[in-house]
Length: 206
Image (cartoon, rainbow, N blue to C red; front, top):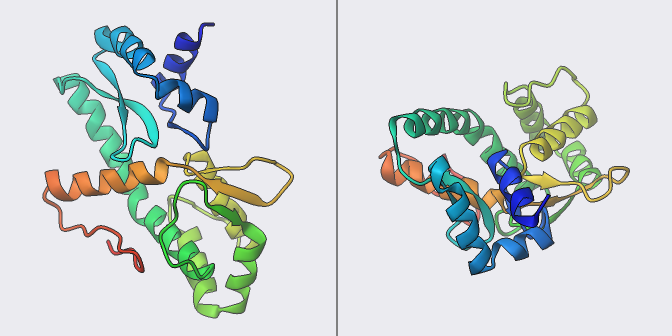
């Protein structure tokens, strides 16, 4: 399969491509000529190549909001609504547990062992992890803290917010889908006129 065909297939499958998930593919998608080719190929499908406000992640968007496109977009937004609060709570929880000054950003390295240790040392963090794990987005069936954390990180990986460079090692890297989520949060707040606040540097509010 050609480079163009492979990239289009991945994008149509809903993949978010950034320098963390696939550095080479991200570099190719940053080329104006290839972007033009992809958009030309996607035109009959009413899709276009899109990126976040900082041009750090590529994904597909609708070219025109037809009734069919609107229906699928509503389905995507409904899924986003279901995941929005638990994902933002996870981001804030990681930020606080690991003592970070800023929100998670693409390329940040997260070690589950360090996160587990901090949560074991602080009852308030442990309680928040348990509450988060029981959310239907994660749907944990375990009462063990280490298993709850393992499931949460696995779910975040499945959703594309994390990658795990080595399966046998307990560390993950944050992807640029986080940027997409924050962009969508701004879209919901501004376009849908919902009372949502942007996450601040020290606190995620929703």
